[in-house]
Image (cartoon, rainbow, N blue to C red; front, side, top):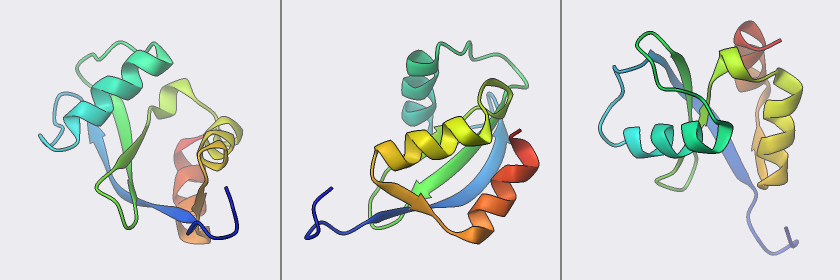
Length: 94
């Protein structure tokens, strides 16, 4: 990311269970499940992060990732999180 591009931030929106996913978030869940090879089954926990300043969401499947992997993935995409979000995620991710 260049110095002129604004840094993106992710904030926790909610923790959901599949299939109780809002219509506007569902495409992100489906996409991420295909990338992570996660089967969408009833009761699957989903953490939804909103990317500030965009209409995008970052999806985390806490049973299928670690805190270290999550942070690395966000950073690889130029996305940072604040301490509040980091503390929240640490309760769900190892």
